[in-house]
Image (cartoon, rainbow, N blue to C red; front, side, top):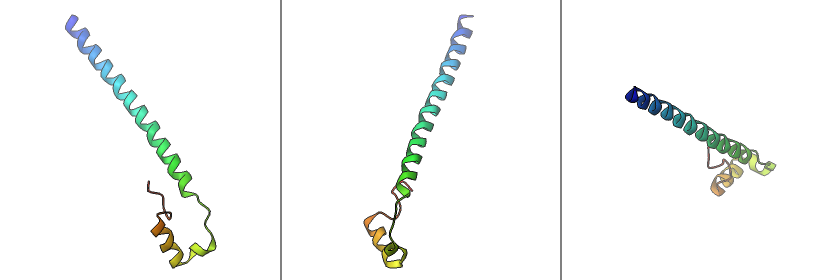
Length: 68
């Protein structure tokens, strides 16, 4: 019985650790996605609707956020 108890305890602890890891990982991913979504929504002027304007934004690194 003692060996069975240890095996069952190890399985339960492993499952709890796995669930905790998945919850923490999903929360960090949700935070990253929310931040990226906020960075994507930037007001741009009509100047940047031309090819030269888009190239200028790309050169500055502002056309798309780095998280994409």
